[in-house]
Amino acid sequence: MKSSEPSVHVEPHIKESNYIRDVVFGFGDGVNTSLGIIAGVGGAIIAADIVILAALIGMFTGAKAIAVQNYLAVKSQRQILESEIRRERFEIENIPEKERQEIEQIYKSKGFEGVDLKRVVDKITSNKEV
Image 1 (cartoon, one colour):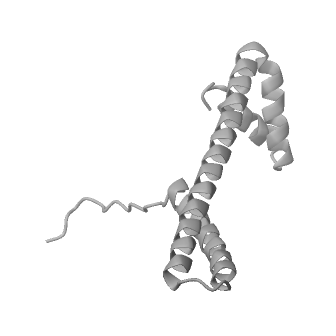
Image 2 (tube, one colour):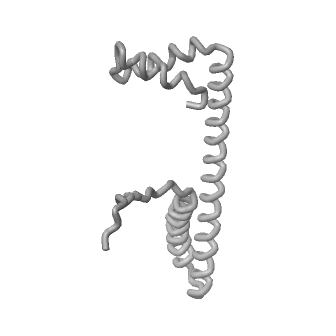
């Protein structure tokens, strides 16, 4: 039996995951470091278990180093973005006409003009959160 209500199409979107990126970079760096350690230590006349242990230690420390570096880079990027948002909010409150002109220039450069340009700028500037 069919429902009289229209079905709702839900399209799932994958959001960026910093954890996946950290793991991929860390794993790649760890593997490369481990191969270097295996090549270097393996050339010495020592037991295979020592070579394997050295490779594992190199892999985990390399992965940790990349994860920490990426965390710090993302954190810095977020701080810059938050600073820009604060600056834009200040300008919206204190010099709204200049901000309106800035928005107008942005949309002019995208090819808007005339009534369409005015409509877009009016819509955007009508809501401070937008």
